[in-house]
Length: 397
Picture 1 (cartoon, rainbow, N blue to C red):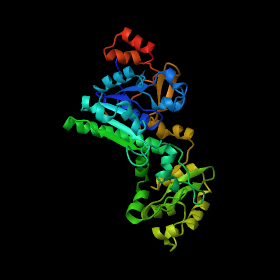
Picture 2: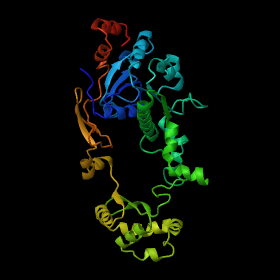
Picture 3: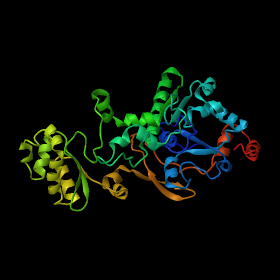
Picture 4: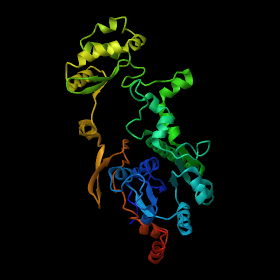
């Protein structure tokens, strides 16, 4: 049966997915969820030897990364397997890979080689540190990029040493930026008729995500430090303990500061010379936070969240993940969606955070079993059942 598309948005594009672990699959998930015909290419199961990078196939991580794709097995170390991939590449719109930079040249499946036969090909590469330069051959890992990209130096409480964040943010953002680059290249191809090589790295993505903390250095020579839960520039902003938990309060600008003080019954604070201006509030942050904390501790999180939002002061509860998905707004946004898996039954995965009014993203297929669509995809290449059986007997697939 032909590919089932998760959306009409990218349904005209065919993507060959050569990626593993997280950054690459994150990129390709964006394309699959928006309707591209994604073909996930993996080593034959016997060659994996039980070492499936990225976790067990039936695990939640793998399932969430690989929905809406088809899958086939192909031994790229075998000349016949490599020939099949090159044949597929002639008609593909996109190839995505996250090998170490030298691997694709060694296999002869780099952009320059494949573009000779398919000049419209958009070829995307994700690496740890870039396609060239002194660190190009180093293995990439999210936490290494978090450290080298500066994020760990500004995460955590002052004096407690560097701290990684709770998600693989370098992996995830590198994948998302790569998908954005692919779509930019596909848009440009409509004008030029030509493909191009798109590449990013975990290190580049992590540095970009520093955003204003990075520009504090590039423009002013200011090196940001750890601030814990305190916002580095908007004060008071941070975590406060309530009578039954914790909450976030974000006070930015003089109007919100005045409304906040009135809401907590301390309309005197803006008149106090120690807290009357943003620089003075920054200078006296600890004393001010202690005053606020004494008040916030007297009522529940719900009391303060309801009151502050009524008065136009940004505030919200601090949830565990189960509470996040139980929140009525999260339910309304549909961030948890169900798809049926032949192996696992109905499973709930995390939905796309983007809404398109005419061409929405859906879950049309659970992550594929090992080589589930190999025969189907090779049949689309024009191979007979006997030819496919021969390839399987030779462990090419």
